[in-house]
Length: 307
Image (cartoon, rainbow, N blue to C red):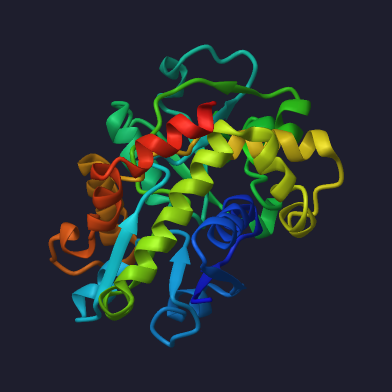
């Protein structure tokens, strides 16, 4: 059985990853070997030192690598938004209250995206951004700065919302910033060229996994309740289902990026990684997704899954 070594960094990616692994095994004769790489530097080096074949995580750091001549192929984008919630005090009713106030932002996880969001919402230069490290407040604990009154809002992954909501804060509904987000995938162009048939079957596995998670929740949860639940250190079935549902809301059945999502992602790469002056589209090769789409594979799978 041919093997694809799939590397990830954060455990909250594992529900999608293990659904991909299982669909690859059941339906497409591909063994997906799941490889966790914890350190950021090690993760960003993984494609180039051949520690893996495919990465499933943020992709911005690949743009400057490509600008230095490294050949990388981005080939699918199952999620096109940051998927974060804006957490505010209970009394805040609209963004009108934000002007002149502080916005607490994580030092990790693409902070420049917040600048782009403020620009999109007409709040650029109207607020002060307060950078707050997870080391100071705990993972996704920037809500504590809102609770103390030091900041009026922060963005949070809804996987970590319960503590903030339990403390009396609330979510304010706002538009999301289009970006190439979680679960986007890339490989070396050499791998894409030399193992094109394998990558096509692997892409089928990705699409099948996303369709399973979106359209057949109970079947997907049977997979997620095994290794992913253990790795994410989730103790109860209700909490597993809450986090699962949060992940699923961000997934799209046809994993094409949009021009705006690519543009924003490249802007983040330029601001945070010093991306070279390259055309960001040169890294994208969507022909595997398009071939599967044009052939009716995706539509037929959706129809089957809806039965």
